[in-house]
Amino acid sequence: MIVFDKLWGVMKEKGVSTYLLREKCGIDSKTIRRLRANDNMETKTLNKLCAVLDCRLEDIAEYLPDEQ
Image 1 (cartoon, rainbow, N blue to C red):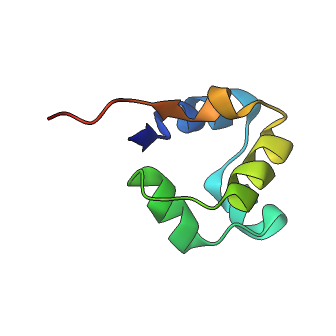
Image 2: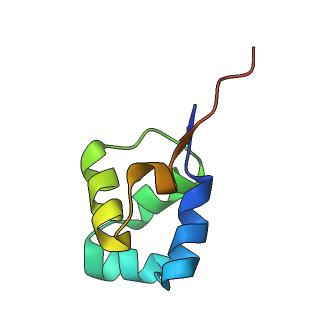
């Protein structure tokens, strides 16, 4: 499972709010809800996030094996 728990810390560290993501970066509130729920995410959205936050993918996303 891919989780985006690191994203929120990076956003706080860089002073980027969800409002900024919505209004300035074109990431809609539905996508932000999906990020919070660790749902599937398009690579173009991940690309936007990395560009806005000036970070690498592994700074905002992490793979955790599914519990069996």
